[in-house]
Picture 1 (cartoon, rainbow, N blue to C red):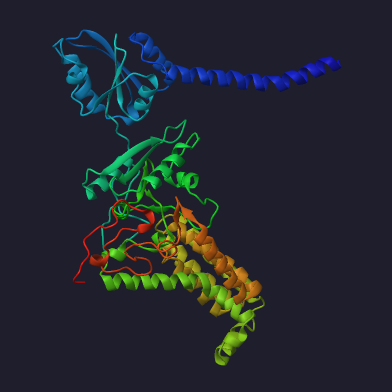
Picture 2: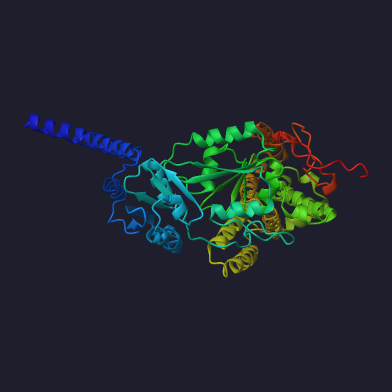
Length: 519
């Protein structure tokens, strides 16, 4: 009896291992099958394609048998009907092949489609079919013909939703990478604009497009990016936002080091300065590499507005940055530790409003800050017509009710509202999240140690920012370390005075225009 139980336990342990071995062997055999060359025997090749694509269970993979006129050869078309342009297949492939009468014509000359290429390995055939192309197999031929017929469904060109500008282009990227490349090529009509494609996932075969200007982009940065992308060993990367976490240098840092933009004009301006752009299908945005802190602080509209107006907006944004980071922590530090800094009249006014409030200042501020974040998140997630209403009504009702119930003082409502509104001035979504999280850290440090805690945390944050690099580029460049550039950091200069490209990315051509000696 004991022996039988022991045998049963051994079988239970060994069976999963045996199943895994069988599965691994089957996967290895499948991979070997895909790396084989194309068999000249049409029937055996089509049987292999049927096996790989599970035909006829797989309904949208279509096989179309035909006879090529003139050549008198059997042929089969293979395509996925849901991602191909069927009229192109009918008009430019099937009809010319069937109606051909000359026996001396090559297949490439019979087909009237815009793009025809040949492949000789099954793996390349599968990649082409999965990309929406149509593949033609001909009997007694050891190669297949790939005809470009892809037609993926997607949105049209619409307005940018997150990076809104009053003055400037309104076009935004969509989920089609080829459309996005077209929007960039519309702005850079130059033969040095290079578009490279890489397959970045092993199972889903997601395609990544790397864009750069050949005579500007730094080779070291380009190789660093390609190495990171080529070293990825993942089954699927569906979106640029997921790729961002895989390739960034400081994934655990609170500060973003890759710039995300949905505006083709902004991506183009970075390309012309020597930066590198990443695009993917299914991603309505681009990634700009490398990125510094000032890239997140700047806004596309700064340059579309006149010089004085653009700098005025930057001053407002800088003030908003300091308000959203420090206003709540300064209030807590002053009321808890540094009362002597407040004028007597103001101190009496604050004391009068807080006299009937049962909670300390830190509890008041945290309650209101968390309530503000909840209202902001709720406004984003509900349907568009209701979102603004929830935000405005929720904030008004909640603030008024909290004051009347003597839970918080009116001054705290004003301070939290001002800090929350100022956070909306930070246009980049990743930097906005970083600032919002930092605000809570400053609040806690001020509650524990007053201005000393706030100052200490600020210094630690600056030390951290100095150590961060984005693909080898210092995060606070060109301020520290100092590089030759157009000095477009806090304030922008006159466009005619912006002579140099950013020196910290070491572009091949530093000067983008002749210096204006008169100015």
